[in-house]
Image (cartoon, rainbow, N blue to C red; front, side, top):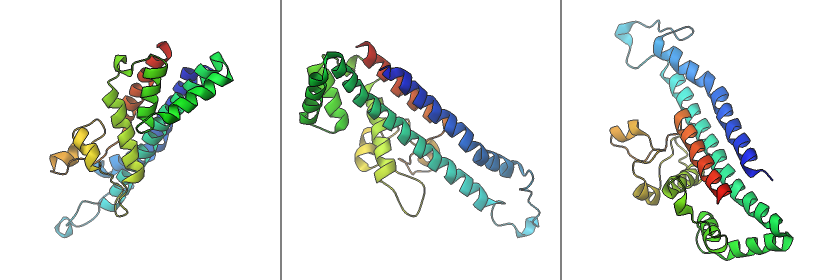
Length: 213
């Protein structure tokens, strides 16, 4: 199976999805900020105590956050699916018995799922991820960010923060919000179009390295 082909197709679909799905929310924010129809402020300036259409702006901004979070989870899920299929593909090359043996060895490795795959490639396939052009901490940061998005949810807000462990390793990581950090609130996860593009590059370059290994 051409694993990279299918990975690329998935990643590009995710980027296209974000671009098209985010457009209405980006348009709403831009129109509010510019005072364009239908967001024209007709209030008496003397009675104004907050920006016009603040609720609508916040709803659009929150929607962008949620959409970015979902797309990042799909990108990270694509990485995990690639690693699983790559092992299956290697196993099929040498027969079903080898494929099942690789899965058995994978299950016996120590650590989380990512560490298990790293050890399998290193110890059983002689492929050292440290030789990847993509720093392994970048891939780990992607995984930890996905974990926080799924498991570190606060019911009262769409903002998602890093866990203490995650923040300890990546206090100023790719997926943190510089604006919140500047206000003294570090560790808030932010995923916009540029960060999604970078996440796709990290995953694709890393997996291309595994193809050539």
